[in-house]
Image (tube, rainbow, N blue to C red):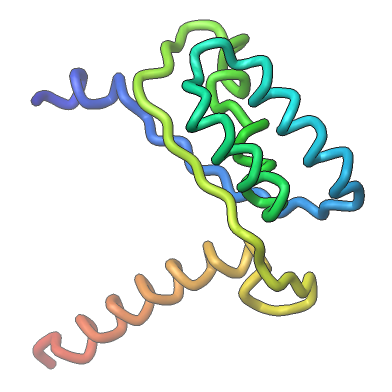
Length: 123
C-alpha cells in the first residue's frame, strides 16, 4: 500500500482508569442494558447477568461502547473496535501509572540506541 492509502487508517489507543464508587448502581445499569438487548439469546443473558453481578469490570464492559466515543467525530468511520476491562491495583504515585513517564521511556530507549551507535562510530 502507498503512504496515502495507509494514512487513511489510524489506531487510537486509550487507557482509562476508573474508580468505581457506586458498584450497586454500576451493576444495576449493566443488568438493565443486558435486559434491554432484544438480540441477546436468553442463555447468554442469564450468563451475562451473573457475570456483571460478580465482577464490576464485567459490568463496565457491558456499558462502554467504543462507537459512542467516536460517533460524533466528523470525517471518520469506525472500522474495527475491541475493548476489555479488568480490576487493577491502582497507586497514583507509582511510576507505572505515570503516563508521561511512559512516553519518556521510549525516548530514553531511542537515546540509548543513538549512544550505542555513537560508541561504534569510527574515530
